[in-house]
Length: 213
Image (tube, rainbow, N blue to C red):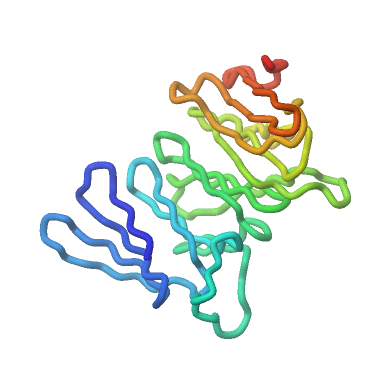
């Protein structure tokens, strides 16, 4: 099971991994609402405002005791509103206000407006026209939802994705960046280049400005 609580502690959300369902529990009354989900999902995260949870199949989170799903096994959906977000989703991030979700998969970034009446992911190809591009592994999102930074496996650059224009541009990140994060105040993005023993610091308000190293 995975158990998450809303920021106000008024609700708990339980992913019942064994029977493929999600239960929402009211902390005051202990009333429960349960929703069935797909059998092959194994990971859940919650938006900062507690309004949404996103579930997907993360290959890195597979366990030997997982129930084998019947029939076709999908690796490219997030639910409860089913959305195709690209093969092998790796990470889901939210803007601090919980209004936007960003999903990174091997080759795509999916931008989802959680305020829309119908949730439709906007797919942005990370390396169009590039054969055998490295798989994306990690993503962080600017606090205003304007940009996202994507770290790829074994790359020497980060990809900066303009979520408004859908443009993608590479910025230097040293040798083998392995960690990517946003500062608590949202003003800086930081990448650790483990291969070159360097720290790359980017201006989150001007993401294409050369980083401090």
